[in-house]
Length: 423
Length: 179
Image 1 (cartoon, rainbow over the protein chains, first blue to last red):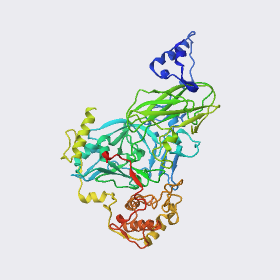
Image 2: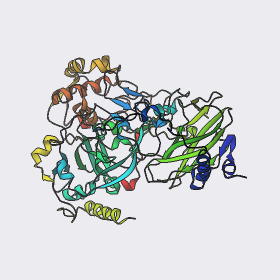
Image 3: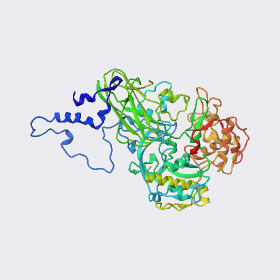
Image 4: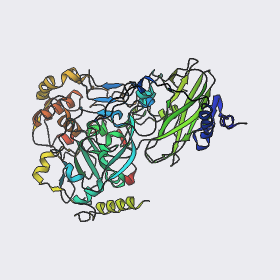
């Protein structure tokens, strides 16, 4: 049996293949294929493709994606009636790979548009139950000790479309595109709190943004002590305006709304302020009529980004299944994939970077036989939390809207097209 | 645990204990002192007990005029909704197959109405309303939801005392140890 044959051992129903294709030992087969093509005598004038016949474009101050990549846009975008900046834009997950979201494609959720903040005039105010109320400007914050981490940010309304009674005919981005991951850098908030001196009765932090809605959330100080940042950088550059320039709160693993953008004021209190966005919105209504407040951590979740609606298969054969998994509680431990609607499962290969509270890229090899298939993924994190199936995720939470983390199923039809289904 | 994370936790513990400030060795301690006057000028926070509410007052009768001029276009006649959020009605619907979340049916604290209007409304002219107008609008929305009478005056003393119908409709998901 050759190397390539042994790599194509089915490990679960309907064509899922051994994940060693994505491990280092799998490279041997590919190398052989490349070498096999290097035969024949040397040509006097080797052929040149059109773009090899003259020098190309000049350098430029800002890099842009290839003009051929027209799908690399935040879509779909939705805003409330009469507004253009009170809504969401979504990361085009199905056209991306790896775990870092390009900053220009990071999803957006704004409550009153993107403020145009002059960094020289902006201040971060720290007050309330502190010994010394303080103001910090951006230049001052740059002198503080900073850390950076690669972590996800997810809107707690992400994937809520899967609660619809019937499957919506939408793309992966439309359903799940309110998740992105970046390298976030900034000042641990504990350092600033220490300078101000939190009084013993201080238990919460009320964070205000400098947007026109003065968007506000109350954060327990225990989270701040754990890992909160005043983020100044995203993917190596100053925050983009849509992501909070010049500074934002960043609370790893917690619902995105709590990571208040354009951070202006932090008031230490002995209780939450019960702002609109933590009571009327971003609370989870249960079927019994009772709603849950402060459901901050994002649950363990995964989704196959390719194939997915809009990315058609072209004839039977071997394909890569790829997707992302994440958990607000820590690292991803395992991702399993099914090609037969959940009847059988195989473990996916994880890319090298498996970081806490970050996207993890998973992959599997699949031999599509040209027949109907239903692809699903389910993740487990290092705490043992297992991503629930759709029914379990909705149990008692039919109208909760926020924090849906059930399994996504993509149906592949005989033409190779994918669609959202409930398996 | 990394050295760095350990250090942050130690700092955090120290902060929680209310230890003296002045900054850790690696902190440049560049915060500029804020006077209590400048703090009150920048502080939006209003707590459910009314802390932070400004002076001023208004009732539903005056609030109706403000509503018609500033709110009706987006929130409909009498707060019935359309094209944007419905503000009135929906009482008793939360456990049904079609829950309707409004100020009257869902919001647990009356202070949040004042707070949110003052922060964010009207959408295209936030900050343009006086405290009297916001108290009046708050009174109007409470009146339309059947919570107060049309001549009940809302101010810093009366508003926190208003008991919202869904006040007991919430539980905290946050574990006790991290509150």
